[in-house]
Amino acid sequence: QVRLVESGGGLVQPGGSLRLSCAASGFTFSSYTMGWFRQAPGKEREFVGVSWSGGSIVYADSVKGRFTISRDNAKNTVYLQMNSLKPEDTAVYYCAARGGSGSYANPVAYDYWGQGTQVTVSS
Image (cartoon, rainbow, N blue to C red; front, side, top):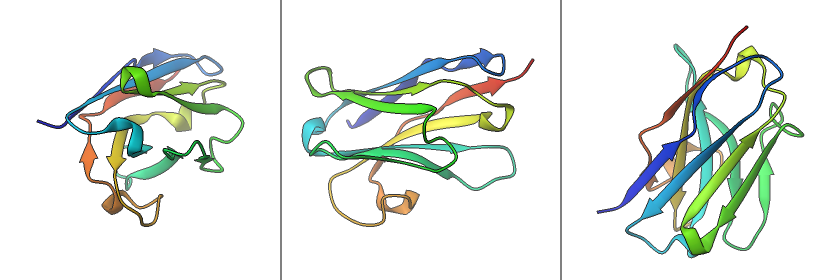
């Protein structure tokens, strides 16, 4: 019943941009914390950024200044705008949701996950 569906991934050259979307349904989106994570082959799932229901946003140091999270509660959608992309940004990107508290950078703290969307940065 709960669904998180990512879209917008693809192949982009270094320095390029992509905007990922995550459409949510089946829960009260506006009251949930929404996180973005990524996972590269052979690596653990990595925190990218998080948007709290109250409006605060925190980013990982690796993407700070390049990525921007926004959310449209009326559309039950959270976005990840990615600029100045680097090859090391290549990964499957996931959105996640949680209604409670905990370590925002820990994937275990999140209740729901999307299927992921592939982002490949290559010349």
